[in-house]
Length: 475
Ligand code: SF4
Image (cartoon, rainbow, N blue to C red):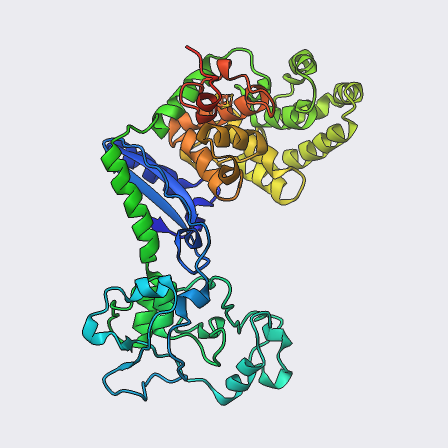
Protein backbone atom coordinates (compact mmCIF):
# COMPACT_ATOMS: atom_id res chain seq x y z
CA UNK A 1 0.00 0.00 0.00
CA UNK A 2 1.15 3.52 -0.69
CA UNK A 3 0.05 6.78 0.83
CA UNK A 4 1.31 10.19 1.86
CA UNK A 5 3.67 10.21 4.89
CA UNK A 6 1.17 12.22 6.94
CA UNK A 7 -0.76 9.03 7.43
CA UNK A 8 1.99 7.94 9.86
CA UNK A 9 2.36 11.27 11.59
CA UNK A 10 -0.88 11.83 13.46
CA UNK A 11 -0.59 11.76 17.23
CA UNK A 12 -2.06 8.31 17.74
CA UNK A 13 -1.20 6.79 14.30
CA UNK A 14 -4.64 5.26 14.60
CA UNK A 15 -5.24 4.21 10.98
CA UNK A 16 -1.80 2.76 10.35
CA UNK A 17 -1.57 0.84 13.63
CA UNK A 18 -5.08 -0.57 13.36
CA UNK A 19 -4.48 -1.59 9.75
CA UNK A 20 -1.24 -3.39 10.65
CA UNK A 21 -3.01 -5.28 13.44
CA UNK A 22 -5.84 -6.34 11.12
CA UNK A 23 -3.32 -7.54 8.54
CA UNK A 24 -1.46 -9.55 11.19
CA UNK A 25 -4.73 -11.17 12.25
CA UNK A 26 -5.17 -12.23 8.61
CA UNK A 27 -1.77 -13.95 8.67
CA UNK A 28 0.42 -11.27 7.10
CA UNK A 29 3.74 -9.92 8.30
CA UNK A 30 3.77 -6.13 8.06
CA UNK A 31 6.64 -3.76 7.24
CA UNK A 32 6.29 -0.01 6.97
CA UNK A 33 8.68 2.69 5.87
CA UNK A 34 8.67 6.25 4.59
CA UNK A 35 10.63 6.05 1.37
CA UNK A 36 12.24 8.79 -0.68
CA UNK A 37 11.56 7.92 -4.30
CA UNK A 38 14.86 9.46 -5.53
CA UNK A 39 16.54 6.61 -3.58
CA UNK A 40 15.03 4.26 -6.15
CA UNK A 41 16.07 5.98 -9.37
CA UNK A 42 13.05 8.28 -9.65
CA UNK A 43 14.24 11.79 -10.62
CA UNK A 44 11.99 13.38 -8.07
CA UNK A 45 11.81 14.38 -4.43
CA UNK A 46 8.74 12.45 -3.35
CA UNK A 47 8.28 10.92 0.08
CA UNK A 48 5.72 8.19 0.43
CA UNK A 49 4.61 5.84 3.16
CA UNK A 50 4.86 2.24 1.96
CA UNK A 51 3.28 -0.69 3.75
CA UNK A 52 4.27 -4.18 2.63
CA UNK A 53 2.26 -7.13 3.92
CA UNK A 54 3.36 -10.68 3.13
CA UNK A 55 1.26 -13.77 3.68
CA UNK A 56 2.61 -16.68 5.71
CA UNK A 57 4.56 -14.29 7.97
CA UNK A 58 7.52 -13.91 5.61
CA UNK A 59 10.40 -11.56 6.28
CA UNK A 60 10.59 -8.51 4.01
CA UNK A 61 13.94 -6.81 3.32
CA UNK A 62 13.71 -3.28 1.92
CA UNK A 63 15.52 -2.79 -1.40
CA UNK A 64 18.90 -1.03 -1.31
CA UNK A 65 18.87 2.59 -2.49
CA UNK A 66 20.64 3.52 -5.74
CA UNK A 67 24.12 5.02 -5.44
CA UNK A 68 23.30 8.32 -7.14
CA UNK A 69 19.94 9.94 -7.83
CA UNK A 70 18.83 10.43 -11.44
CA UNK A 71 18.88 14.14 -12.28
CA UNK A 72 16.29 16.01 -14.27
CA UNK A 73 18.85 16.44 -17.06
CA UNK A 74 19.26 12.66 -17.30
CA UNK A 75 15.48 12.28 -17.24
CA UNK A 76 14.26 14.75 -19.87
CA UNK A 77 17.10 16.48 -21.74
CA UNK A 78 16.59 14.27 -24.83
CA UNK A 79 13.06 15.56 -25.39
CA UNK A 80 12.67 18.14 -28.19
CA UNK A 81 12.09 21.81 -27.44
CA UNK A 82 8.44 22.83 -27.47
CA UNK A 83 6.44 25.97 -26.95
CA UNK A 84 3.46 26.36 -24.67
CA UNK A 85 0.05 25.47 -26.15
CA UNK A 86 -1.92 22.27 -26.12
CA UNK A 87 -1.73 21.73 -29.86
CA UNK A 88 1.24 20.11 -31.49
CA UNK A 89 2.05 22.28 -34.46
CA UNK A 90 4.63 19.96 -35.91
CA UNK A 91 2.43 16.97 -36.60
CA UNK A 92 -1.31 16.65 -36.74
CA UNK A 93 -1.10 13.00 -35.71
CA UNK A 94 -0.21 14.11 -32.15
CA UNK A 95 3.47 13.40 -31.93
CA UNK A 96 6.74 15.21 -32.40
CA UNK A 97 10.04 14.13 -33.85
CA UNK A 98 12.34 12.36 -31.43
CA UNK A 99 16.02 12.24 -32.25
CA UNK A 100 17.38 9.69 -29.79
CA UNK A 101 18.37 8.93 -26.19
CA UNK A 102 21.61 10.24 -24.69
CA UNK A 103 21.52 8.79 -21.17
CA UNK A 104 20.93 5.21 -19.91
CA UNK A 105 17.78 6.43 -18.10
CA UNK A 106 16.44 7.79 -21.39
CA UNK A 107 17.31 4.55 -23.19
CA UNK A 108 15.34 2.65 -20.55
CA UNK A 109 12.38 4.98 -21.07
CA UNK A 110 12.51 4.28 -24.82
CA UNK A 111 13.18 0.53 -24.59
CA UNK A 112 9.64 -0.63 -25.34
CA UNK A 113 8.64 2.01 -27.86
CA UNK A 114 7.70 0.07 -31.05
CA UNK A 115 10.38 0.29 -33.73
CA UNK A 116 7.96 1.99 -36.11
CA UNK A 117 7.57 4.80 -33.53
CA UNK A 118 11.28 5.16 -32.75
CA UNK A 119 11.34 8.70 -34.16
CA UNK A 120 8.19 9.84 -32.37
CA UNK A 121 7.44 11.34 -28.96
CA UNK A 122 3.83 11.48 -27.80
CA UNK A 123 2.09 13.67 -25.23
CA UNK A 124 4.85 16.26 -25.32
CA UNK A 125 2.44 19.17 -24.84
CA UNK A 126 1.94 21.81 -22.19
CA UNK A 127 -0.26 24.76 -21.35
CA UNK A 128 -0.01 28.02 -23.30
CA UNK A 129 2.23 30.69 -21.77
CA UNK A 130 0.92 34.25 -21.28
CA UNK A 131 2.97 37.07 -22.73
CA UNK A 132 3.81 38.53 -19.31
CA UNK A 133 4.75 35.09 -17.95
CA UNK A 134 7.07 34.60 -20.89
CA UNK A 135 8.95 37.71 -19.76
CA UNK A 136 8.89 36.55 -16.13
CA UNK A 137 10.12 33.04 -16.97
CA UNK A 138 12.94 34.53 -19.00
CA UNK A 139 14.18 36.39 -15.92
CA UNK A 140 14.23 33.30 -13.74
CA UNK A 141 16.79 30.64 -12.90
CA UNK A 142 16.25 27.81 -10.44
CA UNK A 143 17.11 30.02 -7.44
CA UNK A 144 14.71 32.86 -8.31
CA UNK A 145 11.80 33.34 -5.95
CA UNK A 146 8.49 34.81 -6.97
CA UNK A 147 9.14 37.84 -4.77
CA UNK A 148 12.37 38.48 -6.75
CA UNK A 149 10.39 39.24 -9.92
CA UNK A 150 9.65 42.88 -10.88
CA UNK A 151 6.36 44.07 -9.38
CA UNK A 152 4.70 44.55 -12.79
CA UNK A 153 5.18 40.84 -13.55
CA UNK A 154 3.64 39.61 -10.30
CA UNK A 155 -0.04 38.78 -10.56
CA UNK A 156 -0.24 37.29 -7.05
CA UNK A 157 0.70 38.67 -3.65
CA UNK A 158 4.38 37.81 -3.18
CA UNK A 159 4.12 37.79 0.63
CA UNK A 160 1.63 34.89 0.46
CA UNK A 161 2.77 33.16 -2.75
CA UNK A 162 6.53 33.20 -2.31
CA UNK A 163 7.06 30.12 -4.47
CA UNK A 164 4.28 30.69 -6.96
CA UNK A 165 6.74 30.32 -9.86
CA UNK A 166 9.59 27.85 -9.67
CA UNK A 167 12.07 26.95 -12.33
CA UNK A 168 13.30 23.37 -11.99
CA UNK A 169 17.01 22.60 -11.71
CA UNK A 170 18.47 20.38 -14.45
CA UNK A 171 21.21 19.11 -12.12
CA UNK A 172 18.93 18.06 -9.30
CA UNK A 173 15.76 16.01 -8.91
CA UNK A 174 12.35 17.54 -9.57
CA UNK A 175 10.03 18.70 -6.84
CA UNK A 176 7.09 16.32 -6.20
CA UNK A 177 4.81 15.83 -9.21
CA UNK A 178 1.32 16.27 -7.80
CA UNK A 179 -2.11 15.35 -9.13
CA UNK A 180 -2.95 19.05 -9.58
CA UNK A 181 0.12 19.84 -11.66
CA UNK A 182 -2.21 20.94 -14.48
CA UNK A 183 -3.34 23.79 -12.22
CA UNK A 184 -0.02 24.41 -10.43
CA UNK A 185 2.09 24.31 -13.59
CA UNK A 186 4.06 27.39 -12.55
CA UNK A 187 5.79 25.28 -9.93
CA UNK A 188 7.28 23.25 -12.75
CA UNK A 189 8.90 25.64 -15.19
CA UNK A 190 11.24 23.80 -17.54
CA UNK A 191 14.94 24.14 -16.51
CA UNK A 192 15.89 25.89 -19.77
CA UNK A 193 12.78 26.64 -21.82
CA UNK A 194 10.28 29.36 -20.96
CA UNK A 195 7.25 27.18 -20.37
CA UNK A 196 5.88 24.72 -17.86
CA UNK A 197 6.68 21.02 -18.24
CA UNK A 198 4.80 18.82 -20.69
CA UNK A 199 2.70 15.76 -20.01
CA UNK A 200 5.56 13.57 -21.31
CA UNK A 201 8.13 15.32 -19.10
CA UNK A 202 5.91 14.82 -16.05
CA UNK A 203 5.55 11.16 -17.05
CA UNK A 204 9.34 10.80 -17.38
CA UNK A 205 9.83 12.37 -13.93
CA UNK A 206 7.43 9.77 -12.55
CA UNK A 207 9.39 7.13 -14.58
CA UNK A 208 6.54 6.17 -16.89
CA UNK A 209 8.25 4.84 -20.05
CA UNK A 210 7.54 6.55 -23.37
CA UNK A 211 5.38 3.76 -24.81
CA UNK A 212 2.94 4.38 -21.97
CA UNK A 213 0.02 6.62 -22.99
CA UNK A 214 -2.54 8.42 -20.85
CA UNK A 215 -6.27 8.64 -21.32
CA UNK A 216 -8.28 11.82 -21.88
CA UNK A 217 -7.31 15.47 -21.93
CA UNK A 218 -3.87 16.77 -20.86
CA UNK A 219 -5.41 17.78 -17.51
CA UNK A 220 -6.65 14.21 -17.02
CA UNK A 221 -3.24 12.86 -18.05
CA UNK A 222 -1.44 15.09 -15.54
CA UNK A 223 -3.82 13.83 -12.86
CA UNK A 224 -3.15 10.18 -13.69
CA UNK A 225 0.59 10.81 -13.64
CA UNK A 226 0.62 12.83 -10.41
CA UNK A 227 -1.54 10.33 -8.54
CA UNK A 228 0.56 7.32 -9.49
CA UNK A 229 3.18 5.34 -7.62
CA UNK A 230 6.31 5.87 -9.75
CA UNK A 231 6.84 2.65 -11.74
CA UNK A 232 10.52 2.47 -10.74
CA UNK A 233 9.55 2.53 -7.06
CA UNK A 234 6.91 -0.12 -7.74
CA UNK A 235 9.55 -2.19 -9.50
CA UNK A 236 12.01 -1.92 -6.60
CA UNK A 237 9.40 -2.87 -3.99
CA UNK A 238 7.98 -5.61 -6.22
CA UNK A 239 11.46 -7.08 -6.69
CA UNK A 240 11.97 -7.14 -2.94
CA UNK A 241 8.59 -8.84 -2.46
CA UNK A 242 9.54 -11.48 -5.03
CA UNK A 243 12.89 -12.02 -3.27
CA UNK A 244 11.13 -12.40 0.09
CA UNK A 245 8.78 -15.02 -1.35
CA UNK A 246 11.68 -16.87 -2.95
CA UNK A 247 13.76 -16.94 0.23
CA UNK A 248 10.74 -17.78 2.43
CA UNK A 249 12.58 -16.62 5.53
CA UNK A 250 10.16 -16.26 8.45
CA UNK A 251 9.63 -12.77 9.85
CA UNK A 252 10.41 -12.11 13.52
CA UNK A 253 7.82 -11.59 16.23
CA UNK A 254 4.64 -9.90 15.04
CA UNK A 255 3.72 -6.47 16.36
CA UNK A 256 1.00 -8.00 18.46
CA UNK A 257 3.33 -10.59 20.00
CA UNK A 258 6.02 -7.99 20.67
CA UNK A 259 3.49 -5.77 22.41
CA UNK A 260 2.21 -8.74 24.43
CA UNK A 261 5.77 -9.57 25.49
CA UNK A 262 6.43 -6.01 26.62
CA UNK A 263 3.06 -5.80 28.33
CA UNK A 264 3.72 -9.02 30.31
CA UNK A 265 7.19 -7.81 31.28
CA UNK A 266 5.87 -4.47 32.48
CA UNK A 267 3.08 -6.05 34.52
CA UNK A 268 5.41 -8.51 36.27
CA UNK A 269 8.41 -6.24 36.81
CA UNK A 270 8.38 -5.04 40.39
CA UNK A 271 11.36 -2.73 40.65
CA UNK A 272 11.19 -0.03 38.02
CA UNK A 273 13.29 3.09 37.72
CA UNK A 274 10.31 5.45 37.55
CA UNK A 275 7.63 4.15 39.88
CA UNK A 276 5.22 6.93 38.90
CA UNK A 277 4.76 5.23 35.55
CA UNK A 278 3.24 2.21 37.22
CA UNK A 279 -0.26 2.42 38.62
CA UNK A 280 -0.10 6.14 39.39
CA UNK A 281 -2.60 8.87 38.63
CA UNK A 282 -2.03 11.36 35.83
CA UNK A 283 -1.04 13.98 38.35
CA UNK A 284 1.46 11.64 40.01
CA UNK A 285 3.04 11.07 36.59
CA UNK A 286 3.35 14.85 36.14
CA UNK A 287 4.95 15.21 39.60
CA UNK A 288 7.33 12.30 39.08
CA UNK A 289 8.44 13.49 35.65
CA UNK A 290 8.93 17.13 36.59
CA UNK A 291 10.36 16.68 40.08
CA UNK A 292 12.18 13.36 40.21
CA UNK A 293 12.99 12.16 36.71
CA UNK A 294 16.47 13.72 36.68
CA UNK A 295 17.45 12.37 40.12
CA UNK A 296 19.45 9.22 40.74
CA UNK A 297 17.73 5.89 41.25
CA UNK A 298 18.57 6.05 44.95
CA UNK A 299 16.98 9.48 45.39
CA UNK A 300 13.92 8.49 43.35
CA UNK A 301 13.38 5.44 45.51
CA UNK A 302 13.85 7.45 48.70
CA UNK A 303 11.49 10.27 47.73
CA UNK A 304 8.75 8.47 45.83
CA UNK A 305 7.02 7.27 49.06
CA UNK A 306 6.70 10.93 50.10
CA UNK A 307 5.60 12.27 46.73
CA UNK A 308 3.26 9.35 46.08
CA UNK A 309 0.75 10.74 48.58
CA UNK A 310 -0.01 13.66 46.25
CA UNK A 311 -2.46 11.83 44.08
CA UNK A 312 -4.15 14.95 42.72
CA UNK A 313 -3.21 18.62 42.30
CA UNK A 314 -5.09 19.60 45.49
CA UNK A 315 -2.93 17.20 47.55
CA UNK A 316 0.22 18.86 46.27
CA UNK A 317 -1.09 22.34 47.01
CA UNK A 318 -1.97 21.31 50.57
CA UNK A 319 1.55 19.95 50.97
CA UNK A 320 3.37 22.96 49.52
CA UNK A 321 5.88 23.09 52.39
CA UNK A 322 6.86 19.46 51.90
CA UNK A 323 7.15 20.02 48.14
CA UNK A 324 9.50 22.97 48.64
CA UNK A 325 11.53 20.97 51.18
CA UNK A 326 11.93 18.08 48.73
CA UNK A 327 12.74 20.46 45.87
CA UNK A 328 15.39 22.27 47.91
CA UNK A 329 16.95 18.99 48.86
CA UNK A 330 17.37 17.84 45.27
CA UNK A 331 17.90 21.31 43.86
CA UNK A 332 14.72 21.31 41.78
CA UNK A 333 13.17 24.57 43.04
CA UNK A 334 12.05 25.67 39.58
CA UNK A 335 10.26 22.33 39.10
CA UNK A 336 8.41 22.88 42.39
CA UNK A 337 7.29 26.34 41.30
CA UNK A 338 6.18 24.93 37.94
CA UNK A 339 4.22 22.17 39.69
CA UNK A 340 2.43 24.68 41.93
CA UNK A 341 1.48 26.78 38.90
CA UNK A 342 0.19 23.76 36.95
CA UNK A 343 -1.67 22.40 40.01
CA UNK A 344 -3.45 25.74 40.45
CA UNK A 345 -4.49 25.90 36.81
CA UNK A 346 -5.65 22.26 36.81
CA UNK A 347 -7.70 22.81 39.94
CA UNK A 348 -9.44 25.69 38.22
CA UNK A 349 -10.22 23.43 35.28
CA UNK A 350 -11.16 20.21 37.09
CA UNK A 351 -13.25 19.31 40.08
CA UNK A 352 -11.39 16.18 41.14
CA UNK A 353 -8.95 14.14 39.06
CA UNK A 354 -7.06 15.57 36.12
CA UNK A 355 -8.97 15.06 32.87
CA UNK A 356 -7.41 14.55 29.44
CA UNK A 357 -8.98 17.82 28.30
CA UNK A 358 -7.34 19.71 31.19
CA UNK A 359 -3.99 18.06 30.45
CA UNK A 360 -4.22 19.04 26.78
CA UNK A 361 -5.14 22.57 27.76
CA UNK A 362 -2.15 22.84 30.14
CA UNK A 363 0.09 21.76 27.24
CA UNK A 364 -1.59 24.23 24.87
CA UNK A 365 -1.16 27.02 27.43
CA UNK A 366 2.53 26.22 27.60
CA UNK A 367 2.33 25.38 31.32
CA UNK A 368 3.11 21.69 30.84
CA UNK A 369 5.77 20.27 28.49
CA UNK A 370 4.01 18.26 25.78
CA UNK A 371 6.19 15.18 26.46
CA UNK A 372 5.06 15.14 30.12
CA UNK A 373 1.45 15.71 29.10
CA UNK A 374 1.61 12.78 26.67
CA UNK A 375 3.23 10.55 29.28
CA UNK A 376 0.57 11.43 31.88
CA UNK A 377 -2.08 10.62 29.26
CA UNK A 378 -0.44 7.31 28.43
CA UNK A 379 0.70 6.07 31.83
CA UNK A 380 -1.71 7.76 34.24
CA UNK A 381 -3.93 5.15 35.76
CA UNK A 382 -7.14 7.10 35.22
CA UNK A 383 -10.03 5.60 33.37
CA UNK A 384 -9.78 6.01 29.62
CA UNK A 385 -12.90 5.52 27.59
CA UNK A 386 -11.09 4.34 24.47
CA UNK A 387 -7.72 2.66 24.93
CA UNK A 388 -6.79 3.22 21.33
CA UNK A 389 -6.80 7.01 21.48
CA UNK A 390 -3.47 7.20 23.29
CA UNK A 391 -0.54 9.14 21.85
CA UNK A 392 2.50 7.47 20.33
CA UNK A 393 5.39 8.97 22.31
CA UNK A 394 8.68 9.19 20.49
CA UNK A 395 11.43 10.52 22.76
CA UNK A 396 15.16 9.84 22.77
CA UNK A 397 14.96 6.88 25.16
CA UNK A 398 12.18 5.14 23.23
CA UNK A 399 13.83 5.90 19.88
CA UNK A 400 17.07 4.34 21.10
CA UNK A 401 15.29 1.07 21.86
CA UNK A 402 13.31 1.09 18.61
CA UNK A 403 16.30 1.88 16.42
CA UNK A 404 18.51 -0.72 18.10
CA UNK A 405 15.75 -3.30 17.89
CA UNK A 406 15.52 -2.75 14.12
CA UNK A 407 19.29 -2.20 13.84
CA UNK A 408 18.50 0.82 11.74
CA UNK A 409 20.21 3.55 13.68
CA UNK A 410 20.25 6.37 11.18
CA UNK A 411 16.82 5.81 9.66
CA UNK A 412 14.89 5.14 12.84
CA UNK A 413 16.40 8.13 14.61
CA UNK A 414 14.12 10.55 12.81
CA UNK A 415 11.39 10.95 15.35
CA UNK A 416 9.05 12.57 12.89
CA UNK A 417 8.91 9.78 10.38
CA UNK A 418 10.69 6.44 10.46
CA UNK A 419 11.32 6.71 14.20
CA UNK A 420 7.58 6.84 14.80
CA UNK A 421 7.08 3.83 12.54
CA UNK A 422 9.78 1.92 14.43
CA UNK A 423 8.09 2.69 17.76
CA UNK A 424 4.65 1.76 16.39
CA UNK A 425 6.17 -1.54 15.25
CA UNK A 426 6.99 -2.39 18.88
CA UNK A 427 3.82 -1.28 20.63
CA UNK A 428 1.23 -2.74 18.25
CA UNK A 429 -2.30 -1.56 18.72
CA UNK A 430 -5.10 -2.08 21.21
CA UNK A 431 -5.07 -3.01 24.86
CA UNK A 432 -1.50 -4.31 25.45
CA UNK A 433 0.02 -1.39 23.55
CA UNK A 434 -0.44 0.99 26.49
CA UNK A 435 1.75 -1.03 28.85
CA UNK A 436 4.08 -1.97 26.00
CA UNK A 437 4.67 1.70 25.33
CA UNK A 438 5.47 2.51 28.97
CA UNK A 439 7.69 -0.59 29.08
CA UNK A 440 9.65 0.80 26.11
CA UNK A 441 10.26 3.99 28.03
CA UNK A 442 11.45 2.07 31.08
CA UNK A 443 13.76 -0.05 28.92
CA UNK A 444 15.09 3.04 27.18
CA UNK A 445 15.76 4.89 30.41
CA UNK A 446 17.13 2.10 32.59
CA UNK A 447 18.28 -0.86 30.45
CA UNK A 448 19.04 0.21 26.89
CA UNK A 449 21.48 2.92 27.95
CA UNK A 450 23.49 4.93 25.44
CA UNK A 451 26.64 2.99 26.31
CA UNK A 452 26.64 -0.68 27.22
CA UNK A 453 22.97 -1.68 27.09
CA UNK A 454 22.10 -4.40 29.60
CA UNK A 455 20.63 -6.74 27.02
CA UNK A 456 20.68 -9.76 29.32
CA UNK A 457 17.82 -8.30 31.37
CA UNK A 458 15.88 -6.83 28.45
CA UNK A 459 12.64 -8.58 27.43
CA UNK A 460 13.40 -7.83 23.76
CA UNK A 461 16.76 -9.57 23.76
CA UNK A 462 15.74 -12.64 21.75
CA UNK A 463 14.47 -10.67 18.77
CA UNK A 464 16.56 -7.51 19.00
CA UNK A 465 18.80 -7.04 15.93
CA UNK A 466 21.39 -5.05 17.88
CA UNK A 467 21.72 -7.77 20.52
CA UNK A 468 22.04 -10.44 17.84
CA UNK A 469 24.67 -8.46 15.99
CA UNK A 470 26.73 -7.90 19.13
CA UNK A 471 26.12 -11.43 20.41
CA UNK A 472 24.40 -10.07 23.48
CA UNK A 473 21.45 -12.47 23.47
CA UNK A 474 21.50 -15.07 26.22
CA UNK A 475 19.48 -18.19 26.93
S1 SF4 B 1 18.14 -6.16 23.68
FE1 SF4 B 1 19.72 -4.69 24.25
S2 SF4 B 1 19.99 -3.35 22.50
FE2 SF4 B 1 18.07 -4.48 22.21
S3 SF4 B 1 16.53 -3.12 23.02
FE3 SF4 B 1 17.10 -4.48 24.67
S4 SF4 B 1 18.72 -3.41 25.78
FE4 SF4 B 1 18.48 -2.39 23.82
